[in-house]
Image (cartoon, rainbow, N blue to C red; front, side, top):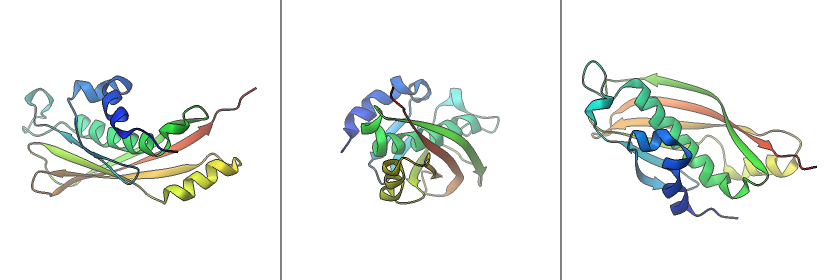
Length: 153
């Protein structure tokens, strides 16, 4: 099974309205990683002129959701992906545009095997690095996701 990654990109601002509100941009999307960019936009600056913490959180959470959709979006007829926990660590002051790179914390095949076994609701983390244009890590984030099996009948 495979997902149309271009369709995910096109639909994301509708599926996740904050993506459109913040004008998040796509850099890359695959089942290996999702990379999204928050442009430098004055309406979303904080008190020191950099991206607001909430905008950076939304960028990271959106990138995590994008990789989950790339990995499991072709199974939405039987699975519901749900974020169950998120943590963010602000490491350095961010200024200008920032980019979030999201990666699954464990192999996709391992998670898929749990789905196929049907005995457990898989839980997995997506690790996100947020960096400025120079490549300096300004934040790190982890979003824990679960895949709820839709029981029919």
